[in-house]
Length: 194
Image (cartoon, rainbow, N blue to C red; front, side, top):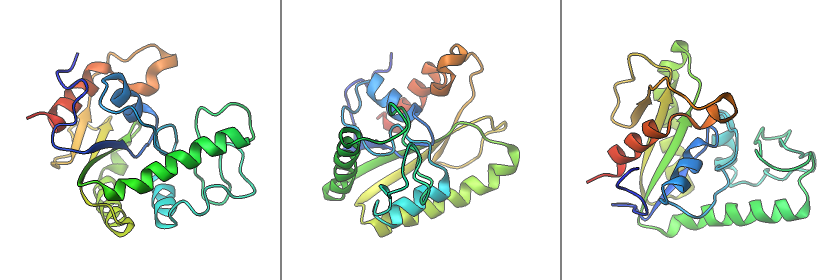
């Protein structure tokens, strides 16, 4: 297990910006974070993530929402049933409020995961990183770092804020979404370590 269990090192918070559930799952598995945020269990493509942040979550709960908001494309993963009932909406509202309160912190590490990548997406990811950096600045986030974890790129993208997860010994199919635990341990050690 990682030597980072329970530590944030130089950051006040380490926050998942989704892609899928893997970043939040591993942050909690290692005891790095205990709180939940709106993107922890969401399947958010790049355009949707920017749209939701630029609107400060204003359209997140449109009247057309079930698991996916038809207006924004924001998907709420791991929610029971098709309709988002009052209890689940309240939980997501608390996560959104917690995310908004991040603006009061001094230093944040954001992690965005790209679980399935094609070679044609390589160049897009660099521009996605720049666009998301700009969006977080406009959102009013304090000093922060944005890191992307990527899979399936060989050779890896040469960028200081991109980290390849390349191990092929993945868990059984039902847990494949989370990737390889040792890959994530190494990734988090590299970005949070001394």
